[in-house]
Amino acid sequence: MNDKSLRALIVEKSEDDTLLLVRTLKKGGYNPEYERVKTSAAMKKALDEKPWDIILCDYKMPFFSGPSSIALLKEANIDIPIIIVSGVFDETMAVKCMRLGAQDYILKTNFSRLCPVIAKELDDAEVEKKQIQMEEKFRVEEQRFRAFIEHSSDIIVVMNLQGTITYINPAIEKVLGFTIKERIGNNAFENIHPHDLNRINNAFKAFISDKNAPPRQNEIRVRGIDGIWHTFESVSKHLVMDNNIIDEIIVNLRDITDRKRSEEVLEESKQRYLELSIIDDLTRLYNSRHFYAQLEKEIERSNRYEQPLTILLLDLDDFKMFNDTYGHVEGDYVLSRLGEVIKRCLRETDSAYRYGGEEFTVILPMTTSEEGLVTARRIQTELGKEAFCPAGQRVHLTVSTGLSQYKLKEEMKAFVHRVDQLMYDAKKNGKDRICSQP
Image 1 (spheres, rainbow, N blue to C red):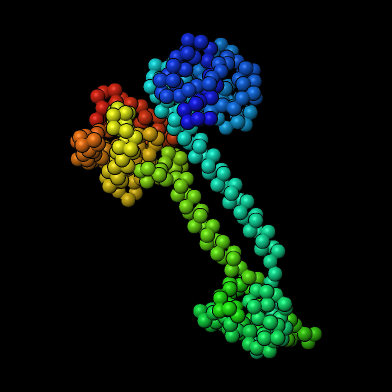
Image 2: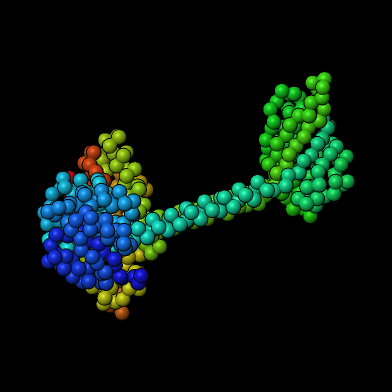
């Protein structure tokens, strides 16, 4: 599938509205392959027969409905973004659909939102797919690692109460390079790392003085014949004679050097993959997936402690025209600079996100809408100071901003939708302005 092809299942009673949807998709740069269905049976058949990228669903039809479509999709256990497209705006209806699982709710009178919403949902789906692939990779690597550990050979050492080795198995030669003859009769502690020696000596003395002590575990570094340090996981146990006196100590040494290195590498990889999964490459802000995860936490905190919470949604004005005029390289530079502008206008407790395309969001914890307005104006002012010089020209860009404070117990998607509408109001009312709501 090329980048702009789109397999769209359209659940719609009206052929005219379907054609209008298709025209909107084509105008937005998509090459739609679509099928229109009007009933539950037809939708189920379409889901069974073909893979789809997006479902566009009318809210109310003679024999079917948006909520029923969402329920059918859940029953089929297919993960496809579904967007409700309705001729009537009803906030209760919109919240109901998004609570059931719809990704968005779009009015037929506002099709300008359709393609940006689809692009965002497709991006989110791709990020989720990559995250699942990474998690599967981690799972496979962990299974392979466990198999390696379970089949490793351990060094078995027996020592007397003075710490002299009385027995050692052949694994010593394979792991550390010493022959059995070289180690028998020598002090068991002579090749222990200096930083571990005092701790191990103290543990040994305590262990041999308490015959009731359970097996003791330690982590210890031992030098091989080649001078290389190996890390071992050791388990020590008493060998008790018939007279109930400790005679010797047996120690099982499992070489975990490779495991320690693997854990370090795996941890570094996890951190890199984690960063890739939540950071936008271009702006170095958090991405929309992380926005929703963080917003959910902040909403929970706001409801629990009844603290104010405000979010901003910013959209670059006339960015498509800028891109078409000066090219995507200059456009990407603008997005990157705007990310920097937003970050330097925030407090440590605030966080900024690239929401999708030229849209950005900001979460302002413990902030009223009036205080958030100060931040929004600061961003507006700072961006106004930025001059972009594509093709030798001096260009200034502006943003339209929607801003609102969270209402206690409000659904997250309804909150975001409310701020999204305020941003579009700012666009409709002339751009380069802030539209806020208490």
